[in-house]
Image 1 (cartoon, helix red, strand yellow):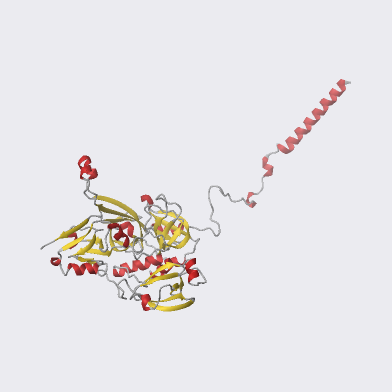
Image 2 (image 1 turned 60 degrees about the vertical axis):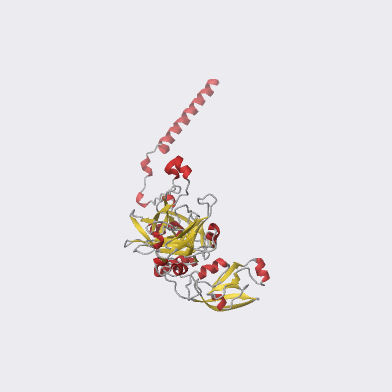
Length: 483
């Protein structure tokens, strides 16, 4: 009986194996050629490396055009300055030249922006200030000597020039139309790394950082999050069209390196300063003739204002433009030539675009009522005349002067004086004076500007008898000449 079941099982297993073999040879092991079709009618999907290459999608910002336009117009500015070392005869005796008091050459670097094909270049004043030798390296590796056309410490802008033709240059954009959140590129030479491009957005406008040491400073920075570092100063801030909207100038950092915030001078201020320096050699600075502060909640409540905005006048200078227009202390300026101003910084920016003699309209609030008056702006001397180079802060006997700032007065312990900001062949160089020297008296007469220097020194060098002041290192001096 068991043999019968065993035979039946073997028969069933054999039958299953035969069925499986037939099925395999007819279905699974059938030649692959029977599956071929006319491939000319088959649409093959496009291969995309999603993880290795980003495709430009509609609406995505492309920086390549702006970067390509900008890198060829941004240059590397390199400076050399002779710095007088403090005297330390004991250390010099034991350690030699390492502690020598002889002047030493100090190298500096920054960036610049070509704005004309014949070699006019914008940079920061602090990049070339006190430099005795300036050279510019172009993006094509040419190195050219540069001369200073003019400087403006009040805005930290300087204009230099190289002898060249057919250079790549940048066109001005419109910084007034920049919006917070808009993309911008910064191009410069951080850490001597030539033609470095970084991107960011406009984080804020009209920033006042209080970093410029000048009584007539104008600070209304564009804040971005484009990475800037040492060497970017004087470089370009451009929009996505490759148009110049600012000159990169500063970073806000606890460590000295980029920490998320960078600042640029808006081209609306830069272009006016550059035009003045090219045309006159001096910035034509217009003044309203007032001291102002931001409107705060307390001021708005006290002045019965409906909004916390504007610039309140705290003092009106006698003989100034504001006094002529009958503006008074506690008036709150809310518009300048039709442009709303929300704070003192924005008012300074608008005034900084004007020249002495320009006629503007100022809208202000007094005792809860709004008024608009025409105002003719004046210069620092209280006139509407153009300030030519050689006048006011111009050259006298080979030296160019600027009035000492309040910070200089405090630092050097002086009540008055002028600072030598440029010096060439002439009387003052022959006397051994250097750039950065502060002169307080000439021929025992106090001096506060270039006109005072010219008046006190006399019509020629023979009338020059004495000079007193402070060296850049802070040492007082008094030199007597002749009888």
